[in-house]
Length: 122
Image 1: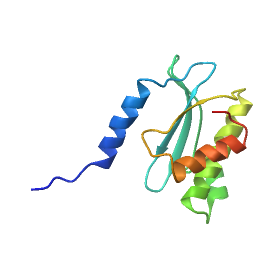
Image 2: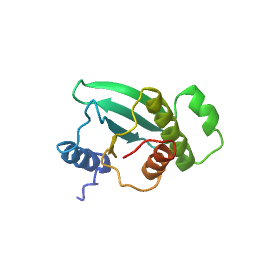
Image 3: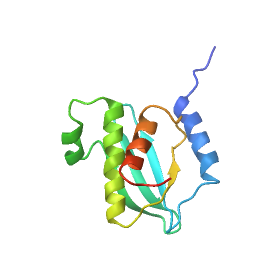
């Protein structure tokens, strides 16, 4: 019998492997991306303190209003722009990008491009 490959489990293995090398500091926190089938989430995390500084996702009501009638990639770009705005308000301009084990294409790339356009550097 052929076993089906669990893509999410493989993604988690990739994410753990990358997280051994990448961590967010107070000066340069980590921008972490999680993508489900219908939503996308982004957090800026200070790993030295173990706290989330800023977060944004498509489930928030103010972002949902902006995302209405748009494709998933366009929604991801909006989330990237919003997280960058919130980070800049907290005086965070540079981050380390953690793509969460996902391939840098599609929604993950759109989120990163949106954050860069809004002023985050990584």
